[in-house]
Image: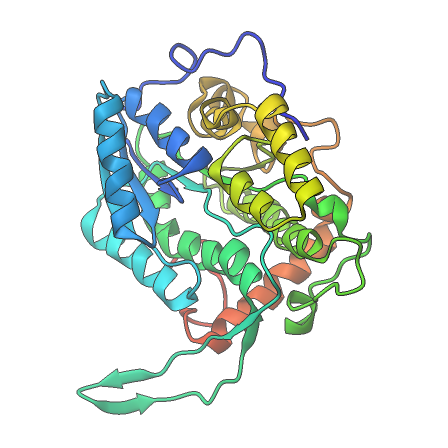
Length: 356
């Protein structure tokens, strides 16, 4: 759970020069995401902070400028992961404004939230006349939308640009999915056959909120591995990793503690303050996955890998057996395609790796 970093890692010296490279960090306005942006800016990257609140993102940008010096550039990207259609629109905005994308870090997430579902669907309007309409009643669990479905459509919409970038000489394109060790809370034998499997409440679990969070991260890790397999099959040299940052002392911990009873609240805060590293160090696994030269030098080992809080590939390369179950990841991929198609955000019938 705790972050135990390699004693030899120095972010100022051990990351590659990112001058001329374009990066997106979702949830880059706070916590680990903010620290990730700060590290990458120091190495010359142009970084988009993907966030729903422009006010919070601009405040983060001002902090980054004040903390300087940075040789990179930072911009705000409007990104609302609670709505799959808005997540896709955000990616399309990037496609319209950038000619390259070198690194995508899917960092934003919800953690321990009450169970809730929201309607997701889309109608197509042209000149105020409905030209196509689907009567959809797709209710999807909120945490699965924010932590999995929206990052998936966001990433796949950006894939053509990342693939183009990867075709250039000396390119080093990477997708980093920030997960956690929480899938250990999900009982072995998880399935992703249909929307019902996405909407499991785990009401009888010891920790329902944590288990639902674990399900969303299980999906993210499993999809990461399947995406990598499909990229390799098409000979596209993009490296996809997922990772567990471990326990990190962030404002999110304070918000979680505030929801607990007096005893749990104070025990958790004591643990957070005394044992968890700062976001600056908590971002190490993310920046290693995104910008360490070692990753590209040993690309075969890192492709589809799951990094531990140390920033190293774990012995099992996964927090649970389900996360690296290839049959489950293929099932997840197919079900995800169906859900995104029903919502109306999928071009064609499949999540394409190579765009026709």
